[in-house]
Structures are given as C-alpha cells and as structure tokens.
Length: 319
Ligand SMILES: [Zn+2]
View (cartoon, rainbow, N blue to C red):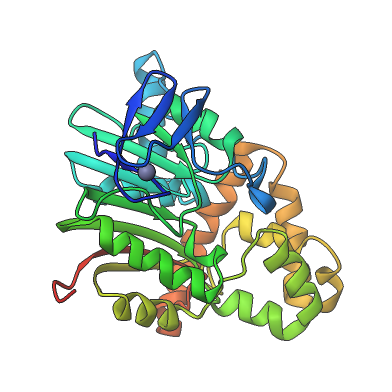
C-alpha cells in the first residue's frame, strides 16, 4: 500500500496500530475507527454525501440476470457514473478515490488496493467498509509521495471547488499519479439546463442549484476541458451526459420549488417528475423513457450541451 506522508514535514509516516507516526518530526496522528485523520473540520460536508454505492448480490438465476441487465442498461444518475468509473479504472495496482464519500463497492478487489480520502468522518466510516484504507483530509493537499497511484477517481468533486482550489486539486492529482496512470473524472457542468435555470432566475439558481449541493465550481463543459488540459492532462475519453434534451430525474428534482412557476417548460417537467419520483422502479422507468425519447432529439440538435462530463485522463508527459 502507498505510504502516507506527514502533513507537518512531508516525510514518510508509519502506521502502528491505532496511530500514524512521522519518522522524521515525530508528529503523531490518531486513527478514529480505523480512519487516519489529518483534519477535524468538515464544514459544509459534515454528514453529507454518505451513501455507499452498493452492489446487490441476488441469489437466484432470474434475479441475477435481471440485476445484471440493470447494471448494464440503467441510465440513472448514479448507475451511469459508477459504470463509467468501473469500466475505465485500471484492473490492477494502487487506486486513490478523492472526495470518496461512502465509497463504491466493487472497486476494491483482488489486485487493487484502494485508498479513499474525504473531509467527512461519517462518510469515511462507510468507505472503510468497502475500501482498504480511509484518510480524513482536505483534498487540496494529498498526503502521498509523487508518482504513487495507477488510478485516481475524482467523482463529483471539481464542480464543488472554487477556481483556486480546483487548480490545486488538479495539480495534486498530477503529482501523485504515476506516469502511465489514469484519472477518472466525473464533473458537474454549467450545461444547457443549468444555464437556462440561471437565466430564468439568478437568485433561485444560486439557492437551489448551487448552494444546496455546494456546487461552487460549475463551469461550461468547454471551460472544464481547457482547465484540465492546462493542468497537464490529455483527455483520452470524454462523454457528456444529462443534456437539455435528456436530463436525469435527479437533476430535475432540483427544480421542484419556486422554479416551477418561473418557467413553463421546467414546470411541466417537474409535474411529470413528481409522478415518477415515488418508487425506485418508477424512477428507473422515467430515466429509461427519457433516454429513448431524447436520444434522437439530441442527435437532431447536433449537440447535447451536457450538465455533466465523464472523463478519462492521462498525464501529457511534459510536466
Ligand atoms: Zn513529520
């Protein structure tokens, strides 16, 4: 497993039982419930984003088959994202999940060692059940030596960070990533639907689409891409999801408030969403229905102007 380095002096720190001791300056960091802690203050994120993405393990043949179909075809918000991450992550080696929340079941497996970093202790208590190691720290400074990881996951992180922090986090990812390593990013963007929401009412946009989720780093898709390239990465894969034509049910739920009356189209969507949001299988049906109806519209419009990007990056080798 990749060694941690001491935040105080930058030298290697060693794990011994329920604590971590610096070999150089003697600083000691206490583990809480098996979680190494470099910070105590989670601020906005205290108690938020705790869900672990679990794999269901159905027993009989029919249920196994149905669940496999669900895993392959579901277009819901979480399922699409998890599928992209799992598909593109290196099969073997050291994996780092930054801003891991409750973690993703199935990422840690024989051949991979997974470390999760997050600011929130309650989230990490869940992540430690599915990952090999959990570290409580601010992701702007990753406590690992350079060239340590074969794969890094940064899912739903960049859209939450203001400009300076975003640049710093990308720099840190580049530093701890091995030369041939891969970064899997999913990032919320200021796509057509969010831009329309902003145009309709700035205050409501601020309240329900930015502050509610901590989305302080929303940028247009092309701006996100150029920032990533400037940080020294090559974009190997880029997939845009949740367009104006094809939003997810989860995105539309953010408009179930005063927005309804501000915009007729949004109001209509929210009305439909309310019918479908009660039961899980109805939610799935809605997202599937949207994908079937909206896909040709997207094609006809010639672009999808997404509200989220799924990316695979590697280092450009110049740094
Ligand atoms: Zn030290």
